[in-house]
Image 1 (cartoon, rainbow, N blue to C red):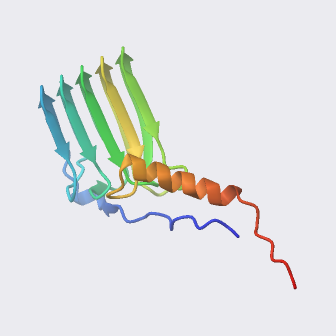
Image 2 (tube, rainbow, N blue to C red):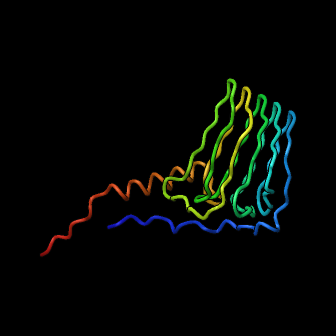
Image 3 (spheres, rainbow, N blue to C red):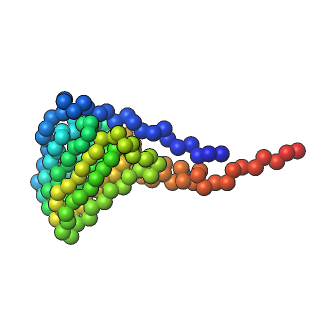
Length: 163
């Protein structure tokens, strides 16, 4: 039995290049800020976070066709960016006593025609996490889905014994 992998996720809405805002951003100083749901990622999206946290959830957002840039300036805080599976991500964040990570969804490949999100900037004494997940899916749900899929893929085919 072949494992039932999810249908390739292509529900991220792509905005035609001529309709995309050029700039936008979010900032957090000693507080928490979250942007999720139906919103439009501009071509350049700046995140400034000092002693706080920012969550930018792109799973249901309208993402520009082509290339978008997310520029981060982080001091003593955390930034989480959630992207839909299949979107290409390039990560280049300079750090000082900080952690930067990208966790793609191993069940989905990247589509060569998918939008590209370039994440760059600086992080000091904090963490920047970029993770691919399905819309509405928690980190725990994603781990369970991936683990179940791997388990299905590693199981030997069942034998049917004739009578």
